[in-house]
Length: 116
Length: 251
Length: 96
Image (cartoon, rainbow over all chains, first blue to last red; front, top):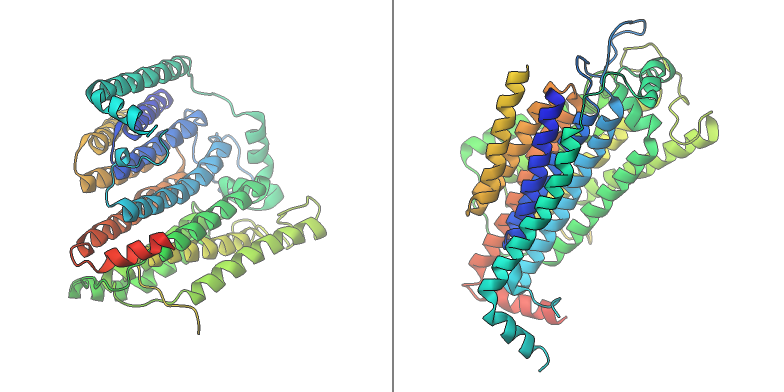
């Protein structure tokens, strides 16, 4: 039950974030859309590894039996993904500041050098 | 000349064009939503661990000596991915430093923080640093690790920068810490490849010690300390560069 | 536990829609940070404390800080244009 709610919430966040990144004309709001897209993807990845009734994968003592843990591999991957998301966001914001310094505006419709 | 004709043509269609773009976006996202909906409807929670995860959970604490299984996966079992992550973070921080430094504005005077903020930041800065160090040293015993500890250290530097934004903070010490930490991390990995059984980033070079104590799990606390220092100094230097005041490094 | 999960996921959707639909930039950035914070609560309920700590510190905290630093740079350069000081430096840097 928790897994299904988490997957649907993650899907909703992915769609919302992509919609914001594709239809907004302001660069800062596009970057916020990418941040929300990242959060949705992380939620989907964690909920794939969730096992109902499992506890966090931290072992109390070496000779323990009968405890069911959740899957630790997706959690390690999401840890990496969150840090890389921060790096990419900082990178995008640096480009936004540079683009503002060149043209004085933050709407992407005014940047026409790549249009043919 | 060739550019004028299409732009004038497009200017006539601007109203229609925006609506066509939005309808197209809606259609694409609807298609993506239909695929994901199919995934949601066929989703059922797992009841048993996959094989690889079962091996990591059963053999992990006794082989590697670390109580936190996610830590043992991140540092030892999938250590090469962590090396890639550290590299990407280093590249992103370097690019941010370069591009912001080219466009800096040194004449701006920023408004100082209030008295309350300055006093609180002086009191809180060593406490937050201590907490960050605690988080990355105890990465193998409780939830935490190098990346979380590094982010907490960067938050302490953000507090200082917000309280006194006109103070010039030098980059030299932070760059030296970051470079030496990165070098040390790769050096430890190479030592694992040369000295121990399982190759790169094996943590059994140092004896494993007693399970659950601070100096256990071989190389894992040392690796996480190095990663914590590297990430902390990297994010701190990004924050200081974004603030704008840098000291020129010609002394 | 499931009812708590449902309530917090409803809050997450509300903050995400606020981040997407509001016209003001500052409110949008703050709502993006709040979405990350609610997601970190969901990670704790799904038995992933490492991921929750990382998402709260990095995804919610540091991302919002970096956004506001970038917004401050944009606003500060905007204010300096009225002096005419930085325009010449911008032009000379564009040519070089």
